[in-house]
Image 1 (cartoon, one colour):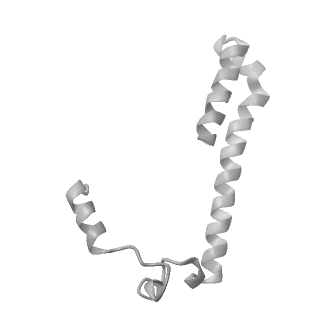
Image 2 (tube, rainbow, N blue to C red):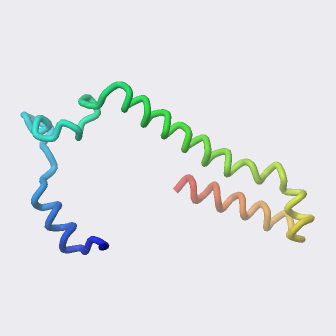
Image 3 (cartoon, helix red, strand yellow):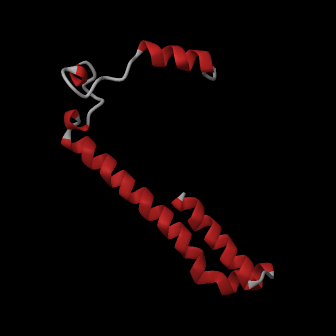
Length: 93
């Protein structure tokens, strides 16, 4: 069952964001990175690094085969450059 806007807003208002000052983070021990285990922090750091590497590799890999793409799909160099440029622009935004 997909959550409706009313359910999402009701949940958001029932569970306020903890304050930075005072004892706000004591109520929500998993909301701050300092309370995560060292293994969890390394896991998410490595996961983010692999995802960034994958995205940058996926953006640069087609640039090495532009000639083969032109022959296979009979497209011009401008079209191939546009495809790669749009992917990189989408990644940056």
